[in-house]
Amino acid sequence: MRIIFMGTPEFAVPSLQAIAAEKSAFEIVLVVTGKDKPRKSKHAAVEPSPVKQAALALELPVHEVDDVKDPAFAATVAAYRPDVIVVAAFRILPPAVYEQAHFGSFNLHASLLPAYRGAAPINWSLIKGDRETGVTTFFLQQRVDTGTIILQEKTAIEPDENAADLACRLSEIGARVVVSTLHLIASGAVDVSDQNESLASRAPKLTRDNTRIDWAQPVAAIHDFIRGLAIKPAAWTTFQGKTMKIFRATPGVLFSEDASASSGRVLVNQGRLYAACSDGWLELLSLQLEGKKYMEASEFARGFRQSAGNSLFV
Image 1 (tube, rainbow, N blue to C red):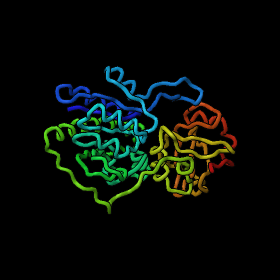
Image 2 (cartoon, rainbow, N blue to C red):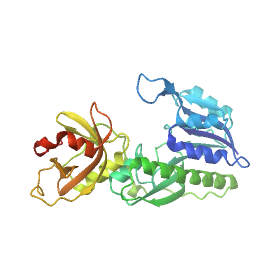
Image 3 (cartoon, rainbow, N blue to C red):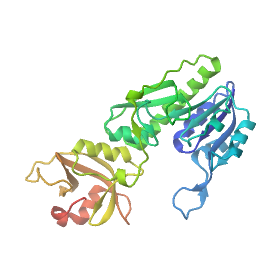
Image 4 (cartoon, helix red, strand yellow):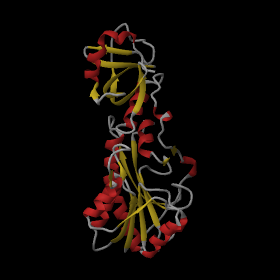
C-alpha cells in the first residue's frame, strides 16, 4: 500500500518510524513536512523539521511545503498516486489534497475526539484537570477534527505529568494506533463511527493572553495550568514588572499566619518559594525571569528573601 506521510514536529516522528518499519505491508512514497526554518531564534541558522530529519535517516523522499492550498501541491501529491495519506501534527489540508488518496486520508489527533478539537489538545486536557486522555485516528473531512473515528486508545494521566511528557507518551501510543489503522484499511475491515457533537469541546491555539496565570484561582487549577503549558510555551506571570515563566510547581502546605494571604503573594519559607492562590499555597519548583536563565525556584528564592513579604505576582 502506497503511503504519503505528512507531519512536522517531534510528535509525528514515532508514527513515521513505525510505518517505515512495516516494509512488507506499506511503502512510504513521500514524506511531506514544513520548510526548514530557524528553530531556536529568528537569527539562528535554518534546520530541518524533526520529521524531515527522521525521513532522511530512513532514506525516504521528502517534499517541503509552505502553502498547502497551492494547486501545485495537490498536483505533486496526485503524482505519487497514494493509497492512503497519513497526517500527524501537520496543517489543515484542503479537499484537493486529501481526496487524492485512493482509500482515504486520516489524521492522528492527540485527544479522545470529539473532546479537544483544535491546535492544542494535550495542553488543554491537562489544564482542565483531566485524569484520562488518549489518541484518535479519523478520516479527514472539510470541517476540522470532525471526521469519522477509526480507532481510539485511552491512557491515564499521571498527577504531575506535564504537557511535554504527555506528548512524548501519546506520540508512542499514536504510532501503534496509526499502524493498526493502516492494517484495518488495507484489510478492508474499517468500521468507523460518527463523533458525538454533544460531547465536542475546543482546544484553541495557545497565545500570550490565554497562558497567563490567574492567581485568584485555586491551587489545584493553577498547578494543572502550569503543567499543561510546560515546558513550552510555559505559563507566565509578572514579578516586579518583568515576565516570569513558571515550569514546575506542586501544591504546598504552610502552617503560619500567612495562611490567608492575598492571591499572588510571594513567600520564602525554609529556602522554598511559594505563591498564594485563592485557597492555599503553591510551591514553585522551576522558573525563568525575563532576561535570566532557567533556574530552580530555590536558587531564585535566595536572591530576594529579604523582600519576599512585600512581593506579588500579578
